[in-house]
Amino acid sequence: MQIVETSNEGLKRAYTVTIPAKDITARIEGEVERLAPQVRMPGFRPGKVPANLIRKMHGDALHQDALNTSIREAMDQLVSEKALRPAMQPQVALGEGYAQGKDAELSVNLEVLPAIEAPSLEGLALEKLTVPVTDAQIDEAIERFASQQQSYETVDRAAEDGDQVICDFVGKLDGVEFEGGKAENQAIVIGSGRLIPGFEEQIVGAKAGEERTITVTFPEDYPAENLKGKETTFDITVHEVKAPAETKIDDEFAKGLGLEGLQQLRDLLKGQLEQETAGLTRTQMKRQLLDQLAAGHDFDVPPSMVEAEFAQIWSQLENEARGEEDPEAALKEIEDEKDDYRKIAERRVRLGLLLSEIGQGNGVEVSGQEMQMLIQQAAQQYRPEDRERFVEYVRNDPMAAAQLRAPLYEDKVVDFLIEKAEVTEREVSREELQAAIEADTDEGEDKAEAKPAAKKPAAKKASAKKAADKDDAPAAEAKTEDAAEAKPAAKKAPAKKPAAKKPAAKVADEGEAPAKKAPAKKPAAKKAPAKKAASDGE
Image (cartoon, rainbow, N blue to C red):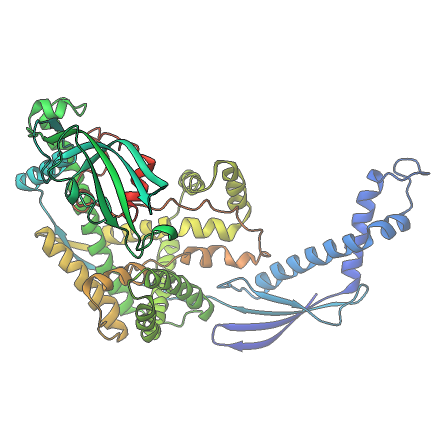
């Protein structure tokens, strides 16, 4: 095999690789010899079919297999001889004039990883902001949790705001009952805002046993085309009016949740609050760390890796923009900042390569057991019938496995660096910690890359940050450890089961509410089909 370098500019390399025809032919002959004892053909005894007939029957397939195998081996030899570390899959093209019996001439283009000087770990200094969990925060969390467990008791009076009304209803459009507009013994909390506008308000004043007809207009953006903006009526029969019962937070309340008492509930909620703030603390420390690394290292990064990272960022930003009230304006806004997001992608790739270099130089690794856990966890995202296929796909494709492993590898390197750093602690409030994280994001990433302040509302900016400011460098480890294998593209993973659309988060899920469902939270009651018509769009 002959290798000729045709280009060497920066991190880009190009080669012409020639595979002699005799090598491909020898591989075909070896395969014919291997297959001969297995071929069965009428008129010949087993194993006695002539080689020329085997070539005639299977020649094209044998040649294609031999060519593919020769190309893979040639790529392995190229990488080995030239001591290359490909950043991404090399681009390999077979010469147009190639035909069976001729030398195979390959054009190979690739980008290599930069030579990164092992960074010194001396002088790393981090400030750890800690948030103590107070009794007042625990009390607030308990009260918020108790509000989720609201119970109601029957009263003999007209329904008021905040009451729960048990009723049947039938929806009609132009006097004709429509699909999904009917329910029996439906529990409706007046003022909850769960039903279409005007529905709950018109139940106020109703008493048990009363029948009434209300008129409501469906929103213009209602999902059902036949109901958008349409005026409809609902015939309602009230069975029961219930008022909110006082929830007494004591040992009995906790025991009703399957716990030993109130103290156990307090301990559980305290642990969850501490876990939440510990996660915020680690995020703040990680951003400090990455800012220090970014400030101290500047080297060229492979453009293909930057483009791949930018594509991920951009795809998420576009998806979020399309979900805004004014998608056109949102898309235009991110388009105006496209260059800034490309710089963010470049920073993330550089940091990922740097972390990978640090990890490999200090023996940081993901164990086989940890990798198996990652694969099994990822497989749960697929349909049951596709999970085994996904596991097999990851096991047989080094690039896919490396991409799955990369986030955990990065976290382990970050933890290693935090342990090496000189850490000082300071107690702050939760608000101060969150403000520090926002400040680190702005100063450490945006300003470092001369990114102008985004002219957008805070909430929208936070949404964009989710896509662009994670400071994760996906698959950086993959590029370092496995790209050099230069394997051909693997078959696609099984089709992923679409994730169920999650309802909008309620107040109880926003802050320090229990995350583990530890205190035996009651399962949500199954919604009647009719509620879909009355309350879609939640």
